Picture (cartoon, rainbow, N blue to C red):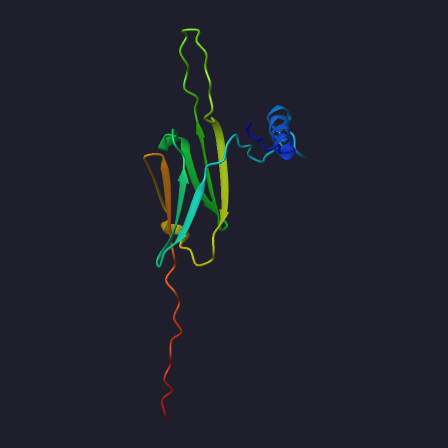
Length: 146
């Protein structure tokens, strides 16, 4: 006999997700100005010596459907994955991959050079390179005798 773990809180999470899809996110209506997401890509952020690198898993999303923007120290990544039309053979279907819009925001440190941010998408991985601004070194000033 196999023992099955009962997790009642997981059912509550599913209920919240389904309600959000029907009536919108909790506390706001569908006509809100806040972006609504259908799925959330996994993101890794790595700090290197001269830059920060953000890598997001966006399989099946075309590069032209991805928008990366920077405003007041906030990096926004959004896009959309479109559903693939199924066959009309009348057979059973099981669709597990999420489709629709995604939206992520990240606060960048002040040491970032916002003018030199680059982004590229290859093999379903979006890579955003955020170079660090050159450090301002304290300069020693010599005092001359008069």
